[in-house]
Image (cartoon, rainbow, N blue to C red; front, side):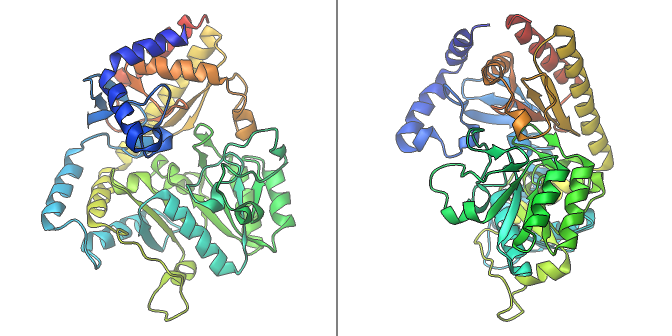
Length: 443
């Protein structure tokens, strides 16, 4: 398989996307306003989606296996969600006062998530983690935070540290260095954080206990999305929960991605409960959304009726009614039957792919949990950032472009997820396309 030939096929098949990208570059840096959906030589420009199928400007249809980065758990253009959005727009799109749907969405989430007694809404997962960390600092009176190496928790200074650090500067694998993700991050952010290795409970405990008197919060993803949907070991999460409780440290679960694996999120799946949970993605039904919630004691910090003893939190579009009605429709549609179905399909896909890679002796593996999955381009077990860095990026790029040309869309790191609209037939065709691409690569 020649990557240049695949890129040529891609370019010839998508001339309208190519031309619009050239126009976009004249008015936006890189042609768009969201780095996570950029890839070489240019990204697809999409015109519509229905169920599991997305259509680009050139009329090419593809099976969507990324679903706007795990957001569209019910697929595209869901009739129930579309109906409630249209009904709400007739009443108004935003108001300078609370609306009934926001209360109902809050009730639904608090009912589903055992650790959440109170919740506040924002407009992105980034805002959710930012405010959760702020709450932890206000609650504990301490400043520093802890996050895992290779974890992405949004685009703000506090957590844009050691997201994809070069191993040349990342330091000891058991005590990683904090490394700024890019230029422009404040020096104080780098100084106010400790980095722990994902899924290494012994190292995590040592680091947290050593600096416990300074640490306000530990933030962790129960499923690491950045490194390929890697599930946390239960012992890793149990250890962090135990050590944070003992040392007056707030434990934050970033469930922006992992909330889709069960009705009550990853914390229900693992039966381990944090002090604060961050939400996003599926709770907005495809609309911009974020939220953070926790126990009454911590969340009371945000109560504006407490005179001056509260943490400021404003936002023109927080609790937007259109987002709220879309979120309600989504959560009400996510019955136990739906979760069982999409998680069963995830198990099916990962099992079939694992067998395929063994059968073809391809240097690949697959990670994931529930309806989440990712292709890994290494035969080594991937369980943290350092093992993820063994991926062959050339193979990743070849597979990504090859799958687009075959009619499937993943993230450009070859991670994906299954929606309620994806069928077993689509999954079988996806597996067959991967087999063909592997064969072209000489395996």
